[in-house]
Amino acid sequence: MPKSLLIVDDHPVYRDALREKLGHEFSKDAIEVSVASNANDGLSLLDQSKNTWVVLLDLLMPGLSGLAGIKVFKNIPNVLHVVSISGLDEISWEPKTASAGASLFLSKNSTSDFIILKLKPLLTGDPIYLAAKESIEPNEFRITKRQLEVLDLIALGHPNKIIADYLDISEQTVKIHINQLFKELCVFNRTQAVIKAQKYHLLLGARSS
Image (cartoon, rainbow, N blue to C red; front, side):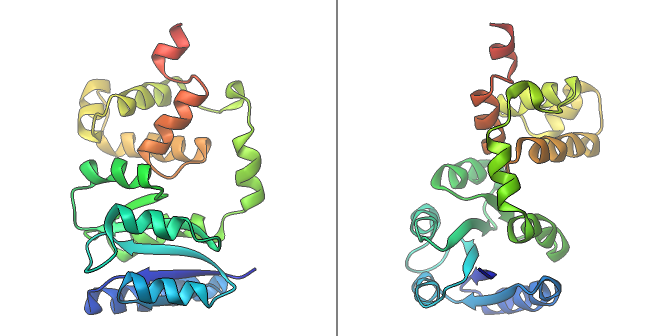
């Protein structure tokens, strides 16, 4: 079943610029990129489509949007992932959107190349591999001691700068460790990483008990 990307955003300049950039990039993988100016139009498009979709959903729009919008789109059978995008504060809103069912939170301050980097695994990833990863045994995670330290600090709610200062490493190194954790745990954001870590007793409290 073909995969497609739907951008739902009420700002025409931003929406159309993003469609042009993402459409050009994902055409290489035969992934269609569509747009809608509001949630209702987006829902109608999905209802008429037999494709499977990743939905890039603006959090602040007239009508249905925000956390309620994430939940509605997430419950549609042919939607694989909902990705929230907003100019709102990432640290405050990423956990909220993850709890509502979003796979990712993207800032509107991000470059289009960064957005592509984050969306690509959702659109081109192997779902069989992802499903198999869910059943992995805890001791089979290839996570270093340093990455476990980063994971503990993420679980405590610390931002990258505090983690870097605490571990006496650079913020860039923290980002590298976090990206590796996301890849190994098969998650897309910090909240999901902590939930998975708790499930498999990877956090310091669980390891010492």
